[in-house]
Length: 115
Length: 109
Image (cartoon, rainbow over all chains, first blue to last red; front, side):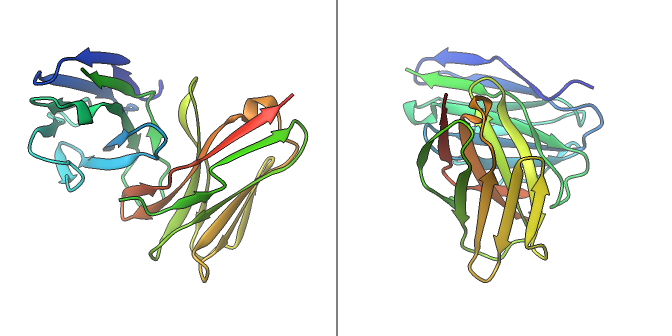
């Protein structure tokens, strides 16, 4: 089917505001990942879902960041009280089962700018 | 934290030439993957090489892995303008991918 999609493609917000970023994985993929990529850097792991549960959220930088995947498909990354340092491209990826040797398929990302 | 480190940071070559990028990493791995990223298409998986493999080919791509030196190389032969992109190596930590900062490749016509 279609690839991983993310909305919005761009989000501009003011410092202190709340934002939600959405990821729609490839249909049938049980594993979903969120990464954050700053300019000139590689992606940085945030959180991994296996089905509906967060199997590893060790990459979330602080408690302002939270992600859900209530039905095991679409996921939402939520950022409270945004700070300028949160500005980055937020990437979502999915894979079939979540194994170490699986290819992760990436969405186009959401470019977040916090003013 | 970033595990891999690509070298060079930037590479500019003429179309038709070969491009070689290197990646070094810090800890033991199960496998190493190479991805390409350009502004039009986002991150695209190129090739995966397992820790017990030494070399792998896919079309114009050739990847080598030396686990004793904790390094990998990506060779793109007969480069094309469409190969202009950033190239990242990523190593696995269970299901997480740990990424380097990438090599920016520019193919001049």
